[in-house]
Image (cartoon, rainbow, N blue to C red):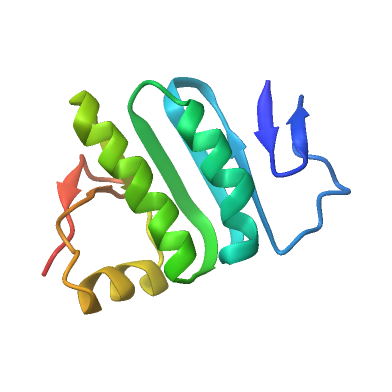
Length: 123
């Protein structure tokens, strides 16, 4: 089953037209879709707090992120680190990498692109 911002679903519903949504897949993969701001962080945080293994954020469909959204990702990353597990950003968009760089947080996440293994964000 997959998780959407509106509940547990077999597939992402067509009716889920909020500005932000997320789906979870096997092995801790969380696909971020749209604009992750304060409104989207509440259901996302609740879901992320339930995860017990490593987390891989598929950011390929993320179009915007604000400080609240970044806080949700960092909180998940910190829980993973405390458990000795990985937290990976897959295909992060420029808006996310730029925010991490401006805040001096580049390098705290492992980053994975379509043709690369996990590496740290460039400075």
